[in-house]
Structures are given as C-alpha cells and as structure tokens.
Image 1 (cartoon, rainbow, N blue to C red):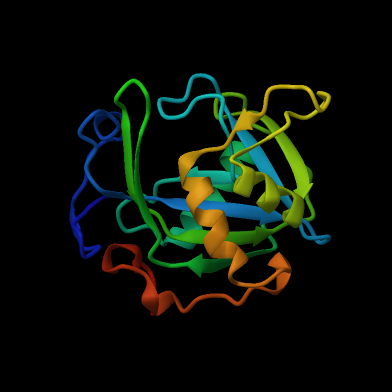
Image 2 (cartoon, rainbow, N blue to C red):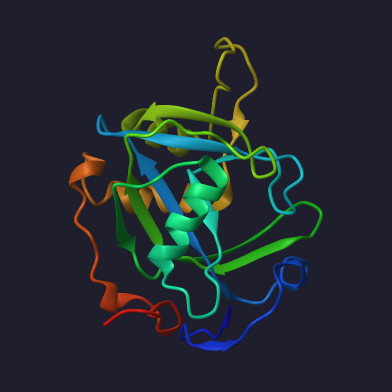
Length: 202
C-alpha cells in the first residue's frame, strides 16, 4: 500500500515494483517477538531477500495487504516466516518511519508501525525468508544495537561482528524508552496509527 507523507493511502503496487533506487513510501510493519522470560527472537534474513540479505534484525517484518488490519498482517507473517502463533500482538510505535539505502542503491522507504508479540512456541523458520534465528535477553540485544553489531551465534569473541538492519538500529532506542522490561511496555493507542494503517479498527 503506497502512502503519502501524512500516512494516507494513495494507491498500491506489487512488492517487486517498490524496492529499488526510487522506492516510494509504503506501509509496512516490524514485530519483535518475546518469550515469557522476556527474551527477544532475532532473525537473520535469507540470502535471497532483495533488501539487506543475510543481515540480523528483529523477529519479523512485512507488508499489510490493502484493507488488512496491520495486527492481522503481523499474525499472518509470524506464521508464514517463523511458524509461530502469537498469544498477544500489541502496537508499540504507531508512527515509526524510515528510509535507508543499500550499497547497491536499493532503497527501503517505509511507514512502519512497530509491534510486540508474545509466544510460548518454538520457531520453525521458513528458509525462503529466514536463514537463522536466535533468542537473546532484551538488554543484551539492546546493548549490541548500541554497538552497531553483535557476535554471530556459535562463534568466539574474535569473530567479525554481524551487522544489524538499519530499521532495527533506529527502532531499538525508541523501544528502550518504554522501559527496561519488554513484557511491561505499554501498548500504544491504535487511534495513533497513520490513516492507511487503520483498516479494520472500530
């Protein structure tokens, strides 16, 4: 779903047509999955992804279909990418937006509300979307984001640090402001979502 600077829907386009050097602003979402101990599930993007292949990032990202409630899109993509069912899905950052460019000129340009999901399930990554997953205590991951990268799992302290996606680097400091316990973060009011993201709201 294409959107203007005020977050209003202005049309739609296939995903393949909106990730290039002149990527238009479009509606997306990011989700951070936590277990009941407050660990965050990180995912490494599959090497075939158009944007930031092989990079570590938050649990799941995606694009709502026109008319699809964003929370429903979150649940849909969690099932598709990670084989997870969420016990709860809460809005955290209703108006997050960013633009980032890869070294090859490919641009990501998204109006991207951020959600928290809680699960007791075991991830079953879809290899077409996710190359690897890793649970980390939230405070450990947040510290790694502040450093700009973290050691890859299973490798010693001398290993080259693994990069983190640009949207995750910008989202985590905003999430830290919500408090030290991710399970206690207050849910945001869905009325604060941009107009294009309010589908299905009463």
